[in-house]
Image 1: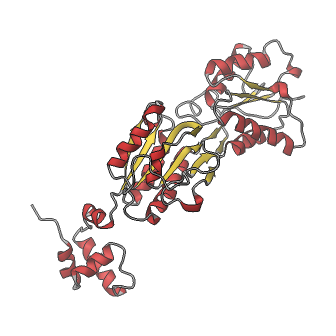
Image 2 (image 1 turned 135 degrees about the vertical axis):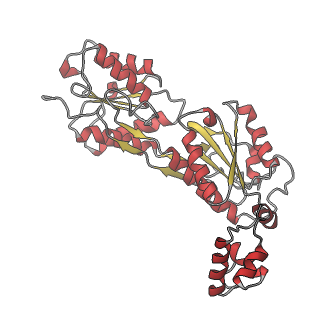
Image 3 (image 1 turned 90 degrees about the vertical axis):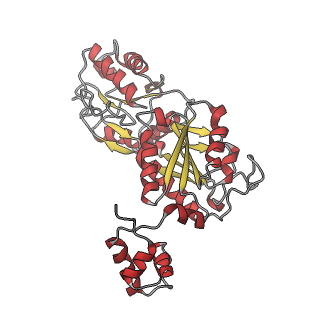
Length: 370
């Protein structure tokens, strides 16, 4: 078996010193090694299929090149797992690996999960949730650069940076889509107020009416829940026994499961979608929205984009953090402000990622005469 090439082999082939090889391949060649020599070193490394020893490099840099991710249920979710996929892709592209721990919605396990990852000398931490929600941040996350994805710090003044979907904008664009088709009598079926997503999507719906110079009919806004049966019963309340002139021509839903229930109610009542009633979902849930009959128009949550944006920001923070980040005074140590190490003045920044309008077959022009 051929032995693995070494830095000395690269140096001999390129006609340079071993230290020059180390400088160039570790990203410190500019200003230290002539450009012509840098090129010869890279060509020699490619010819010998040589790359620096990442473990040795990590030890020299006092970095593990590992990012810890804590999730509440994302690992076992076929839907929101895309957040972690987006984060992991960015980490791998920059030479990091991710280690994920899932607490299975048990908040009492949050701090111990973080501590386990800190014991593995992670360079940074990310907390990811299924569904937008405020998070009581484990205090030991303050010991390394940290960020939140699809959740936000419940501390009002000092908290971790967060990357979340722009739910208000999503609700607004959903309403504007059906308005562009001529609809004006538009209902909104929302989940409960326990999650911030529902009221934010309703807020966007209201903004669309205001922007169009229209008033909102409060009887058309119903908070019914999040599941298929809630959508069915909500739609029956809006449509059953109502004359065509008195029923909404479009029903917006706060998630795709509600929209399924609405479509089932329409079929029960002999109504066609979208000829009689346009139906719009939210989430673009995998294997649901695209495969419905009719295929569901919806707002796609930017799951991969949120994960990628959060990881990009975190790795920038990791790169600017001082070394010796694990030298702390104990599990609850922090920098005094409650923000994470290395996050600086931008600790409480919230980044909004826009949702994407996906137009399919369940929305159409307003019925004639309406």
